[in-house]
Image (cartoon, rainbow, N blue to C red; front, side, top):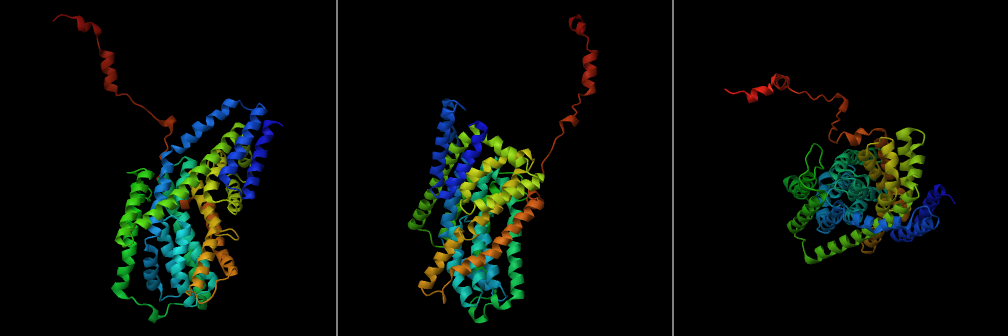
Amino acid sequence: MEMENFAPVMFAGLVIIMLIGFPVAFSLAALGLGSGFFAISMGWFPPAFMANLPISIFGILSNELLLAIPFFTLMGAILEKCGLAEDMLDSMGQLFGPIRGGLGYSVILVGFILGAITGTVAGQVIAMALISLPVMVRYGYNMRYSTGVLAASGTITQLVPPSLVLVVLADQLGKPVGDMYKGAWGPSLLQIALFALYTFLLSRLRPADLPAVPKEARTLQGWALWKKCLRGIIPSAALIFIVLGSMGGLPGMNTALATPTEAGAMGVVGAILLAAYSGSLSKKLLWDAMVATMRLTAMVVFILIGSRVFSLVFQGVDGALWVEHHLSSLPGGQTGFLIAVNIAVFFLAFFLDFFEIAFIVVPMLVPAAVKLDINLIWFGVLLCVNLQTSFMHPPFGFALFYLRGISDTLFKEGRLIKKVESRDIYLGSIPWVIMQIILVAVVIFFPQTVTSFLDKEVKIDLDKVNIEVPESDNKKRDDFDANSLFKKE
């Protein structure tokens, strides 16, 4: 076998181990080591090449940017357990309750706010379903709409800054996290607008499926209602501003006062203060949050190690050049490349989570994107929009699994008046997945949805740079008489 033909074999092996279902981190490392020993036996690279592996792994693990992951995870874990979601859903539900589809609007808005401070899909879907699903079913909301809006609003957290996905993608693309956050604001707001527009149209076309909440069910009115709403919104907005503003992650901010790791640490302190403010801070809450953070961080580290073992050998047999050649030669230039990549990522998301795609697939795509002169911030945000669907599309969407589990629990406890069927959950997710795909298409064909939120890039044409020497200095130098130094007065 020639070395040129081994890269496709490794890629095919990668696809096979993904489909097997064995933990990707370990199977990737095994595939990489096995391929490396085979390449050495064939004489494609010397044994000393594999000696770079420990150095490479320690180099990755010493990356300070990745230290932001446990901080943001801990911040989200604390906030999802402090009861903030329950208070906001109750107050927003009563605020929007008088209009048709009001409970849907409240779920979308609260999902957006929680997404900007928690960053975890599981906690967000479960917290919102516990509060809103019994209420929506009780007042006659269509079951498929109810389950769909709860699952979709939970996945908003994958796109809204400070998303963990954006941190990981920034690291893999070699771009500042603050710029990734700025670029993500446009698609985030567009997604909220799409969800709200769908709710509005459905409430007009099928008003019986999204009725208003009866007046007798609205216990708060006037200033008391607004006060309860602001009690949840103002502290959340302050935390968002502190975390994102300190690292230059808000549109219009050109200066970063803190690194992503430092911003994440401030976010943890802010989350603890919010938990104390809500009266839910306890040793158990902190312990559970730290355990959840430890598990996620350990998973990320093992995936990083496995993907590095594979990618080192893959690059050693010129796999990166093979991928770059095939992707950069796709018809359609930039647009053809982006469409092909997003279709591939969409189907890979049926089997892989976003960490695995970010650490395994994205590094293979970057050289081709650079060769096609694609803005990597735009490219990263586009992939992030696409990766949202991995939590939503049947039959493997994790958000649907979370919703399935919590709905069964609610029915057994008697809080749901009727059982939620799996058919309703899966069919209810389809319109929302379609809206997310529409958003992917919008970002592909209108890159301004991302780039308009970024700082204007200053380009300097070196051919037009002109350095002028003051004429007076030249004249003095020409008129200078060295003999005058030796003249006696």
